Each structure stands twice: as C-alpha cells, then as structure tokens.
Amino acid sequence: MSSHTNVLKSTGESAVGTLNAARIRFATAIQVVSVGPVERGCWVHDALSGRPNARLTIATDLRQLWSISTQQSIQVAILHDTLSLLDFEAASRLIRRRFPSAKILVVSREESFLE
Image 1 (cartoon, rainbow, N blue to C red):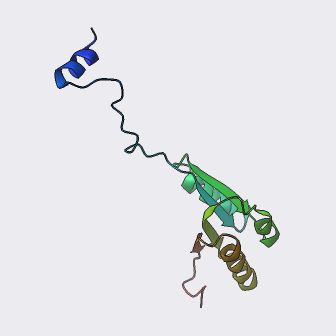
Image 2: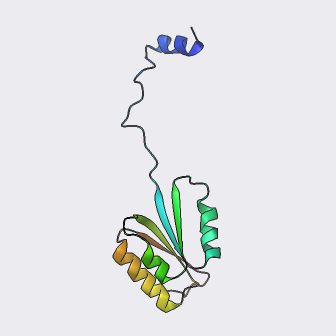
Image 3: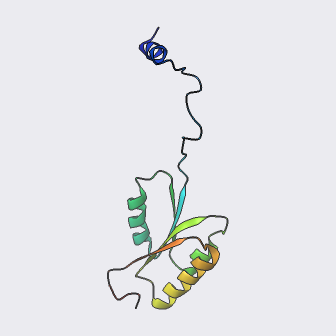
C-alpha cells in the first residue's frame, strides 16, 4: 500500500468522493474592455497577464466599442485620458447602455480630468 492509502485509512476517510462540489469555486472569466490607444491597451494586457481567466478587448475608438457584441458580458471598462471629452462622454453613455452592470474605470494623470 502507498503512504497515501495508509494516511487515508488512519483518518477514516475514503479517497473517493471526498471533494465537496459546493466548496469548489471555478474562476469565472472577467471581460475587460480598454477604450483608447493600443499602447494603453497593452498596459492593461500586461496588468491582467497574471489572471489567466481575464479576457481583454481593445477598442481604439467609438466605432470599435460599438462593434463589441452585447453577448459579451463586459464587467470592467477602462477609459483612458487620451479620449477627447466628447468621446469620453459618448463612450461612457454607450457602455452604460450596452453593458449596464459594467464598472467604469477612468485612467488619467490629471486630477481635474472629470471636472
């Protein structure tokens, strides 16, 4: 007998059926969209590289943002300060309309960007 079998016998447990399905948590994929230049999207990609279940879509403009299927459940939208204020507002409204449960994160170097 292997040492694993001896340990199981000494604890009175069986190796079959010891996993409780309710305790197992499967990592769900997180859908992220980065709105802005590809370079900024690459920064987001690098930040997400440690999460194997993260999926990133990069939309460089409003047309690409609009082309994202509503079948995707976007959880996080990252808006970069490179957008004009008009595009920023339009992107925010579009995200809120198409993906109402998405969290919107604004990345800006300036404190007064949202004023």
